[in-house]
Amino acid sequence: MNTEVFNAKTQKENGTQYAGRVIRAGGLVAFPTETVYGLGANGLDGEAVARIFEAKGRPQDNPLILHVAKKSDVKDLWRHVPDGAKRLMDAFWPGPLTLIFVKSDIVPEEVTAGLDTVAVRMPEHKTALALIRAAGVPIAAPSANLSGRPSPTTAEHVLQDMDGRIDVVLDGGACEVGVESTVLTLVGRPTILRPGGITREMLEQVIGPVEVSPAVLRPLKEGEVAASPGMKHRHYAPDAEVIVAVGNPRKIASIICREYEIEEAMGKNCVVLGTEQTRSCYHGMNCDIIGDREEPGSLCRELFAALRRWSGRVDVIFAEGVEEADQGLAYMNRLLRAAGFTVLDE
Ligand code: AMP
Ligand code: MG
Image 1 (cartoon, rainbow, N blue to C red):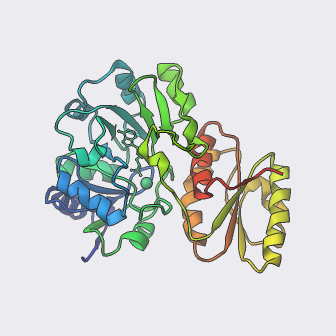
Image 2: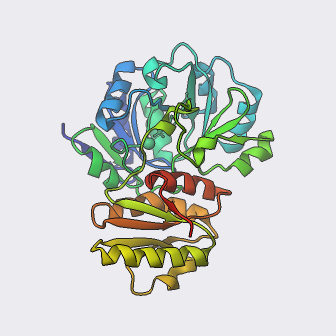
Image 3: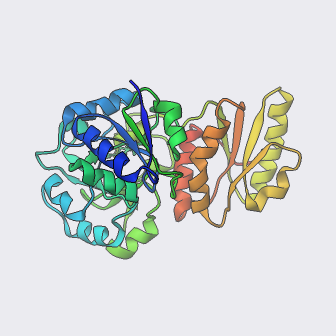
């Protein structure tokens, strides 16, 4: 299959109209959102949705998010719209918040992997909204990477994984948030299943107490049922070992310097994903400064791009843990999974 690439700015009209027709015809289109690039198909067409799973090599039991272009579209997808959802949509849509509620009959089982609930979000990115409007249907879209790899935050990342496997890529430049949307279930007590750009603190200001699923920061225990099927699967892994050091910045830097030396003495190539605060600690070492510890959003924006940058080029990637508050929770959730939960704390 030949994958066509359109520049979402210079070929705006042609690109989105063409891509909308491809979606309607059952094809696959990768498109930018404010979180990461999505791999979209007609969300009301089970056969088209099945092609997403095939192109990504995604486990069949991991449901997809439906993307809509206006808030009122949830009425067709959910059995009814709870009050809390209305308030959250008014506060955070369009934006990086996915809401889960009981599905209506028009949602195919391929989207929900057989669950009776469906995840819906209205993205903020202009190209994503234009594509959904052009398609005229909700677009089912997971991240546009091969399953298990870091999510793509540029069109180039998408092509690394998907060239020849999908019909179209809309290139809209780099994504602003850099990690996938916050996933919040409204079935039972509101619970974050995956942290993201809309933080627990922000949600609580609108609907009061919000729980965080324990599996956000640790692996599932044996026999534990995943609140969200995505929690079960290996995620975000580059082709290199990832090791996370935790503690205060000074302690983190001293752990990383010590371990780096040990790995290097064994002939391994290493890189440190450092921060502004620890820049001066990694003197003479291979160091890639990815953001500011005081602004965890800056780390979220760069994490996946940095994992891809060093994937296959080094043996070991050292990364710094941050406090698990605000956007630091989303950062730690992705980083710990990329590391297969390998953590050093002394
Ligand atoms: P991705 O498509 O890669 O952004 O992943 C979507 C995430 O949302 C995965 O972790 C899914 O398991 C989760 N998800 C989607 N739909 C549901 C649902 N109905 N119930 C629970 N989790 C869901
Ligand atoms: Mg994904």
